Length: 330
Image 1: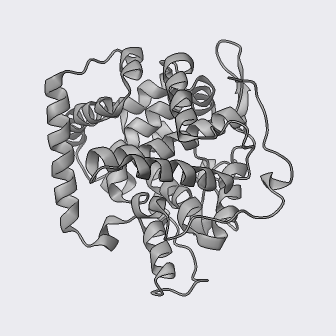
Image 2: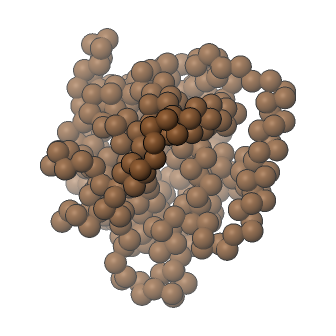
Image 3: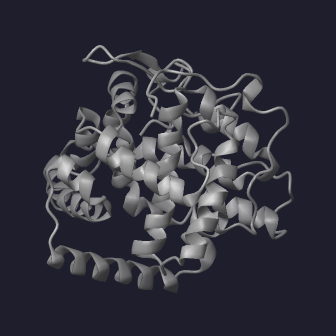
């Protein structure tokens, strides 16, 4: 499997804008649910175990200095690639183009580029797998037919970025071989992946500065290990071995009980309350509660990056920018 730097195909990656996913898709029904936050450390760490992606984050991202705002603002454009309807290709192109400046050489002398098609697709593959894992572990589960449907839809989803389709497996069976290969042969125990899993370094959000330092540290000392345990339960066994984690039958049982409890709690909530604002807006337009050309919702100002980082061209700025853009580096 090639790991050499590359670039998207010319002309935005397609001759005409691709047809986006819609409310008839299974992806619309599953992606954008707040339960997806539970697999956030899994997705972030899995992405950053890719040596090129991990190096790019280490050299270019400010994620670890503003974890919570970064996470919540990124959900808007990432969700928009699924839920923005006819505007989804534009959102996908904006997300893609924020990766253009992100390239360099890692500590081992290996070149990296965020627009290497293999790297870019790996990040997308984690979004797809994260959607499945959320449904399987914190939802009502998936049939084999539904997994195949989600695989087919993840290809349509990926076309929104206008990237080369070369790395994308052709079938669900091919994807499973690809995923196993990545877990066993490509991923590495990187600094960036370890930082994702170390919540003791998570700074307080801007709207939480009133929390005493000692109370925040105490909270993270509890939340951190629980989040890592939930994450380890989602890893494939080769990834657990790579990162030095063990997993017992007791862990598996408790993880299943935790997931069922989450599912029961969320089943009580009204459907729209379970959705991220970008997903909710997509459904509202599809179901006639909003006009089809209603403005897209964007992140609140509290989630914006520091002003010193806003002119670098790699951050989504919501309504604070003439064009909405983002980097999807985790």
